[in-house]
Image (tube, rainbow, N blue to C red):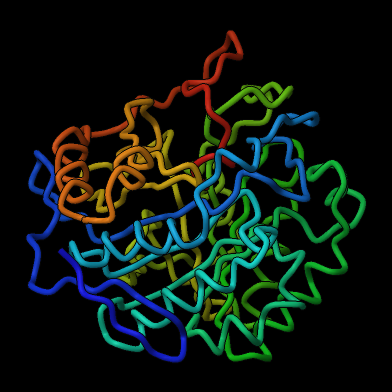
Length: 349
């Protein structure tokens, strides 16, 4: 059962008494929830989506009020970090209503951090409001600083508004981290320059191995780059020092002596990070994925809509967490088949 606390940011369900934390069968406490608020995006990045995408009918999406209720239920169960993703989360109409509600959890101390992963195209419009809601740190997905290559990778995006959005976020007091997918033969030669640029602008850079999720119309084997290879290349130009810094996500960090900044590495293919996984992923339809690289999921929408009492919802969450696997089964398939059929935009990476 929940009580309802009202403040100027809106109504936020809060448990009347403490609820047990979520612990999976391998003893890992689940404290990080990633929420894909929409599968839609204004870009069509070659490693993420097909050029001609069929998006979910709007009627299948949870309302923002339903997303708020679900997120609040997870906060009540021990989630301390919540990341809003997409698609492009800032394309969801009235999404700031949800951001404000989750910001109330931060303000009350129930949530340690509210963050966002974005392509940056809408940041100029929303940066100030995000900061007002308690967002202190965001990730911006950006794979190149070359306008023509940016349009090729995104199939339609313009680099200028993204760079303006990054500056707007920084001006609003939000710390920005750049996420770049390393693509062999496409942007790999540019990564040293991107590293220097990011650190010069006060941003960390995290490199990510491409993941085999969904058909994109591209041959992933041709452009897949192991980050072990990229790290070796960078080590020829920079002094890379192991760093114990962590953000709660899967990245492992190095300090770059020449720039003073950090370099993160996310390596789902060459060295998975499953042993310490503390994450689950919620889609905009109310589907809970316990692992990014597995298809097993739980339908929380049906439970959510069946009753206003959260007891059944918490029971469904418990059942799902007990099915969380030890790890994923990612592999780059020479037959070009994705390891998982759903696109990255469904679960937000």
